[in-house]
Amino acid sequence: MECDCVVVIHDDIGIGMKLGGLPPESMPVRLGLMKGDIIRRTNGVPTDSAESARALGLDAQSAALRKLELTRGGRELAIIYRDR
Image 1 (tube, helix red, strand yellow):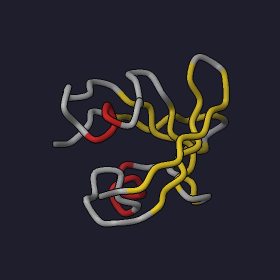
Image 2 (cartoon, one colour; image 1 turned 90 degrees about the horizontal axis):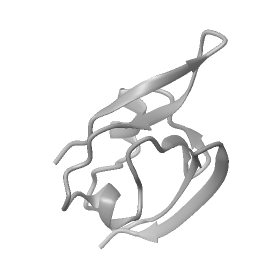
Image 3 (cartoon, one colour; image 1 turned 45 degrees about the vertical axis):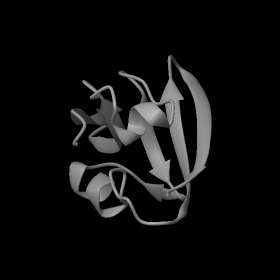
């Protein structure tokens, strides 16, 4: 399942991916992500385009420890998880 997301631009630079519609049983929802969250980095790597989000495996099923750095309602958060 893919998530609906758009690139967030600030001063002509992509700063992250804003999540839109999230399927109820999707991996992002299971991780606690919400509509409107802006994912800025995954494992320290900028998530500033749809291509980078896919390349970093937001929807991947591989076993790996990941740290998502995001903004929610103006607050900075981090979610750390292990894929199964």
